[in-house]
Length: 451
Ligand code: TYD
Ligand code: MG
Image (cartoon, rainbow, N blue to C red; front, side, top):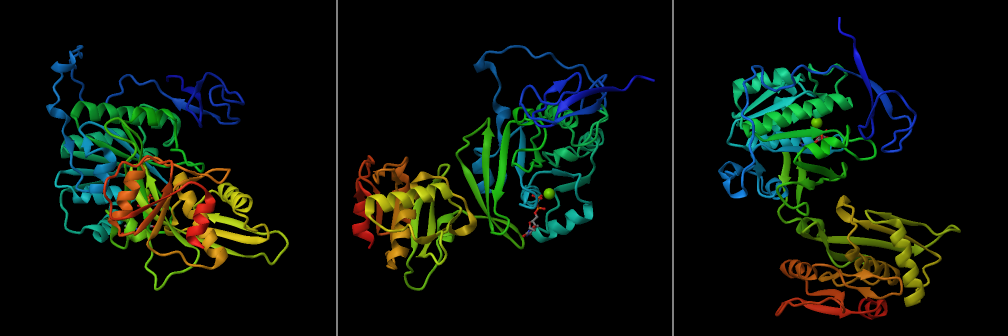
C-alpha cells in the first residue's frame, strides 16, 4: 500500500509547509497550520476519458477568435450590471456572503429564469428542499436540472450527460475530489475542486457560478488563492433583519467593480430594485425634525439616503453617542466640529444617529446631511423635505467638495428635490437645472439655512 502523504497548510492563507509550526510565515497568524492528507493525483482531469489535447500556440492579438466571447444574458438587470453585461463564456464566478443572506435563493432564481439549460448542483440541500424553494420563486420553469452531489467526478459525469449551458455549485466548501484525501472544505480540497472546475469551464466554454461560505471576519472561507483563481468575485451583503440586499463585485476580469445591484427580499424570492432612492426615503405626513436626506454614491450608483438624528438632554452623567449605519468616531468628530465652529453646546446632550433602511454608508458626502439632521433635532426645527445634501465636513468646519457631484445633483433633480447643498469648491459644469444648487463654504453658512 502506498504511504499516505500529508502536508501542512495554513488554514488562513493557504501557505504550504513540510512540517508543523506555530506561526505562519506568510500571513503571521498563530495556530492556523493544520495537517491535511493529500494524494498526488496520477491525473487530475475533469473528463473521465482523456483525449490528447492540442498544445496551445502563441497568437497575435488580432488572430485570436473572439466570436466565442459572447456573454450569457442572465435575465436579471441587476445581476447583469454587476457582471459587466452578462456572464462571459467559460468564466468562473464566486459568490460569497453571510449565511442566510440569500445566496442560494439568488442563484436558484437566476437558474430558474434562464431560457438555457442550467444545472444546479447542491451539496447542502436535498432535491425536495430545493423544489420547495423553487416553487416559491418560479414554479413553471423546466430548463433547470437539480443535482445533489458533492463528489466532483460524479458531477462531471452528470454534466457530460446533461450538457448544461450554465453550472451552479452550492457550495464550493461542500465539494470533494477523489484525487485528494483530506475532508471537504479543507484548503487542499477547495484548491483541487476549483482547479478541476476551471479546467472544465475553460475547455467547454461553460460559465460556472460558485457559492462560497465566509468566515466570521467576513472573508471567503478557504485559501486566498481561491479568489485569485476565479475570474469574478461577487459579494452579497445586507442586514438580515432588513429587506435590502446589495450585490457587489470585488474583482471582475470582464467589467468594472464599481457597479452594484440592489435587491429586496420578498416572500417569493428576490426582487430587483431599479430605483432604490424612492424606497430608501420614507413617506411621511408632515415634516419631522431630525431628518435629512443625503445624496450619496454607492460605487457608481447614486443613492438618496435618509439620515435621522435625535439630540436630547443627557439624563445621566456621561452623554451617550450612538450611530447605526455610520461610523461612531466620525459622528464624534462632527459633533466636536459643531461645538467648536458653530457654538452649539452638545457636550451635555445624548446624540443618536440612524441611517434608515439598514444600510451602512462610508461615502464622506453624507457628512453634511448628518450635521444638518443633528442641528435640526437640536433646535427641534424640521428641514424642508425637499432639501438634500452632498458634501464632506472638514475639521475646521469647512465644507469640502465630493467626487461626481453632478451625478448626485441629477439624481436629486430626477427625484424632485428643490434644493441641494454642495461645497462652494466643487467644480460644477451643469448648465441648466431645475434644482437650486446652494453653494456653501463653512458650517456656519449651513446654520443660517436650516435653523
Ligand atoms: P438562503 O438563500 O438559503 O441563504 P444562503 O444560501 O445565503 O445561506 O436564504 C435564506 C433566507 O431567505 C431565509 O432566511 C428566508 C429568506 N427567503 C425569503 O424571504 N423569501 C424567499 O422566497 C426565499 C426562498 C427565502
Ligand atoms: Mg445556501
